[in-house]
Image 1 (cartoon, rainbow, N blue to C red):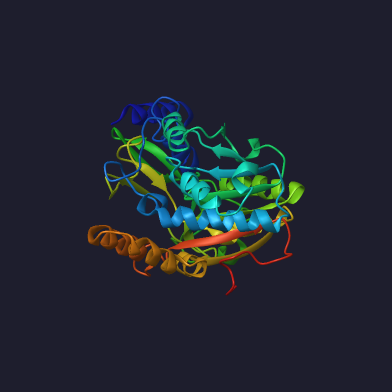
Image 2 (image 1 turned 90 degrees about the vertical axis):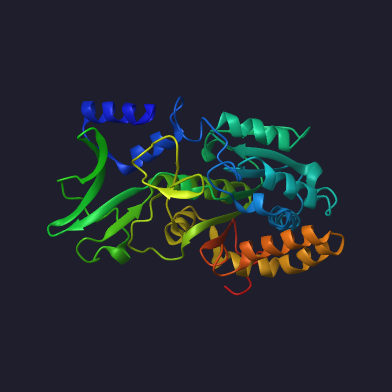
Length: 359
């Protein structure tokens, strides 16, 4: 077992089995052995790759989306340009480069990044060069002011709770320790149905339901900033548009799926995002939501095919193949196009943001 696994086992021996949410939060964020606090997980030599690392087109289009939203807000100067979970800073760097197309946008933008990883903060600083950057540990720590926020694959890594339906009701799934190994078991206590989505409270026996107070709290905090000060946010992640049953918790190591209990601290842990729950949290805070739409629809509406064509005009044949492969991976239904969804959260419904025409 890993050092973090030994630590978790000691916690379980002392306090008893822990909820999946506590296990996930510790595995990812432990200050000494947590996955995100000890490594750069991105890229071919890491454990997974995200859309900004696949192609500059992704960040460029999002940058233009942000610039359009800034203009729609009345071009406030200054304004907060925030990214939640910014990885290596690649998306923000590409967005700011594209934002130069709208005079005044980059000069007015105050960059704020929500990031817990000291290693990734260093990478972000390098990617953004001489740009003044402000870092925060939590969404709620973002400063007041007109805000345009980006969250690409941020919510999927926030901790979830899991519940399983038995003959006598719902029981929370817990992480225990048995025979020298971490294991899953059910809390014998009955869970009240109130925390569970109303649409799935009558799921069949054996069904598993996931909820995430961490996600809804982060969304509520972001939406409150937008409502209080104006602005909008773009949420991009993989998941389902409506609340549904199913066990989606997964671990990724070296681009392969692994047992999430096997090597805590050494593998990425994520779960599908419930966009219905996120939207409800935003609307309860007084914000408006658009979408979710598929990533295919969103990027196509923003003109990714045209952008790919422009890039290919000055590319070598090898570069052109790379551009076509990136377009395929970002937009095709059997790649990221269908599983990944995009939702916009706005302070008002005055105008529909780009990318959501079909909703």
